[in-house]
Image 1 (cartoon, one colour):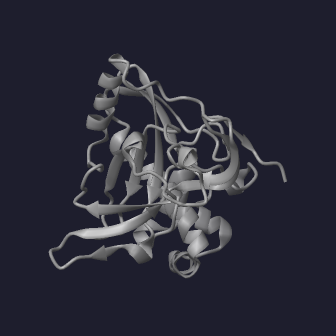
Image 2: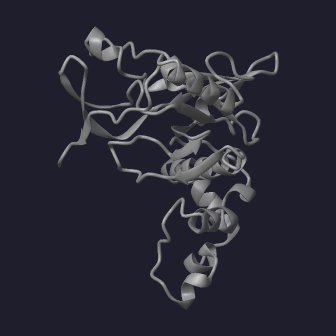
Length: 250
């Protein structure tokens, strides 16, 4: 999850943070008790203006907050579909399962990884279209084992580690919208510090996103999931595997 700025108080403050807590997207930060019934800015003694100033002036706070808001927005905008059920969010630091939402769609499991545009890269072109970049990696280094049995400590995500990438494109025009791509259609990592066999299994840490979306991106995640279902039924792609990764101990 990466930072982007909205510059509007409607995207910060009580409505956002308390909604995140109530939906269990983030854990409540205070102990239980009568005081916890207050809205979060009241608990902290902050006004909307002061909290907005904090968010706008601190990229790390902005990034964390908008990352969780993007997850919530994706959930609200897409997971009420009648064919979606059994929705869950795995722990943020669960290195065996990299995804922000796991759910059943038409009876099969899908994992979606939600990322956001890097604000400084979002540009509107003369023709009115947009282009920007999104960082696509893990928050911590993990040890991954490749098909050739080599091991590597990396923050790169793996081919097949999740099913769908959802890129939050709010920075394109300050409206909530997402661009979706299949994991197996994302570009290959090209960094020369990795062996060719490793690059084939690693996703790049940054991807370019356009609006309106261009291939491999789409505005409709369900079309992409229907494609995957058909390929699974034909034996062309496997079910989402559990990657061979483990935590690097401090």
